[in-house]
Length: 340
Image (cartoon, rainbow, N blue to C red):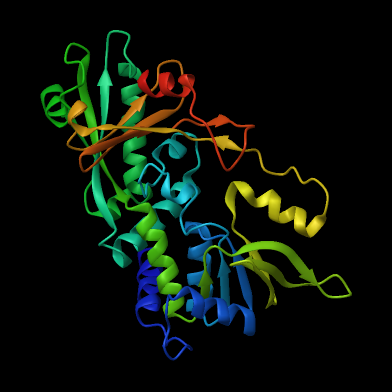
């Protein structure tokens, strides 16, 4: 796996020059290209998934266009827990392959974007006396930590370790000392999510992609035989067609809206879930590292991530039936996040 990662990193660093003589992130220039050129791939959606897909395709030599109806990273990609994590909880669920892949991708991001992705220690406090982490669970967690390291966590250069209550309290002094027995310390990574997305979009342009925000897809175009040929886009009050041999729907929770343009009628394939974070002054928590806190009576955990003068606490994961463009945070969401 390490050889595979090194080859992919080397490929991106030594890729051929962009086919565009003077690549530019200028919106009007890219809109002009989208109007006039024929593309191999048109990506709909300017979040981290869409921008990542555009970069992947463009770096392989494909002619790529990308359009985003709002702004880059304006959706989920700017409202995350700020983590590039290997998914320790998925390992506990038996998803070994998923964790292995996630840790490999994390290593690629650490190598390619060290200015945006950095190693971050994580504390798992072990609390007793009816706390959120009984001792028997702690022993099971120790096994999971070794599994995490052996699955790929060790690529980060450090392995997990058990720490005593004094060390755990020093890392997060707002933990209840009377319930704190010990803790585990392991290593993962965090990222500036919106900047990472913008960097992917910019790099895709450097490799020849044409990308534009505030460009909304209003229709998908097809040949008389029904073959997809591109999309009709509305930008700055004007509609025009983009010609493409293929279309990637990378719109996340809004994917059904694009599918409706293709299939017609109501499409109900996406089950929306709401993930809520709350932001508090870091001085209220004073955590020197990120913390993973289990919620009593729940199989899930929440992250407490330091971010400058702030700390992010999240996330929830509940079914959502409200408007996708204006989700709301309920009192129940806040109570859940604070219950840990």
